[in-house]
Amino acid sequence: MLLQIANATPHIDIAAEEVFRIGFIPVTNSMILNIFSLFLTAFIFLKISKELKNQKRRGFVSRLFIWIYSALRKQVFEIIPDRNIARIVAPIPITMFFFIMISYYLGILPIVGTISVGNSDHMVHLFRGPASDLNFTLGLAIVSIVGAQIYAIKVHGFFGNLSRYIRNPLTDPAGAFEGLLEIIAEFSRMISLTLRLFGNVFAGEILIMMIAFLSGYGSPIALPIFYLFELFIGAIQSYIFFMLTTIFTSLGVAHLEHSETSSSDTQKMEGEVIKTSKQNN
Image 1: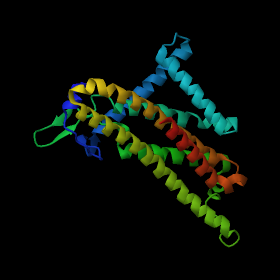
Image 2: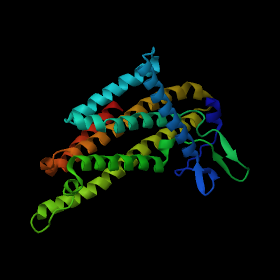
Image 3: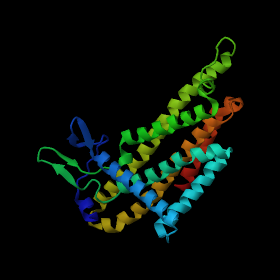
């Protein structure tokens, strides 16, 4: 399979390619692997849940997932001081971590980019990494930002949360300007989450493809090293998305009297997360 990758001609498409249609709905090559990622993530969680419920002996994968889950849950509780809110918030960023990581790992399998379908006039790759599709990362970013807003509304109420963004410019001009900046910040966070994950995953797939092409028949020796590197990067990128989602949610559910510092706090926390990821890289 590695030699098949090496013999393939490099072909880079930023947009996902349509493989077939179900009625008027186009099914792209990234959607195929994305659906598999979704079912695989659900299967693993259901399997572990069943083992815990029936007190069965757990294998290595189950123990590894439980250990990671416990560590991530602990971090959510450290970021969000209110334990009741943290207990409600925790499942979303943790699920995102595992889903992104599994999608990332499926995207670097040797079958991705090597199996093509179609006719002689138009051939498309059957599989494409889900996270290398901008629609996938944008969807996750929207879930992250909208989820943070939903939790903020549950804590502060609709109008209480709205007061973080809209204030009377006559009585509080500085607050009104700050609210406008917060609205812009929400959109910038969504764009940042989208492009950061997409860029790293897309670059990783191109790296593997080019190393395989350049190394030729030496790819069985060269590629495993880069595959290990991509496994590490996949875990780091999943962790960054998890951390930023948790931070954005914690800022939303924070007490309103601290909202004046929320923008600067966000920049500091984002900087710390990105700095940590660069050090790990």
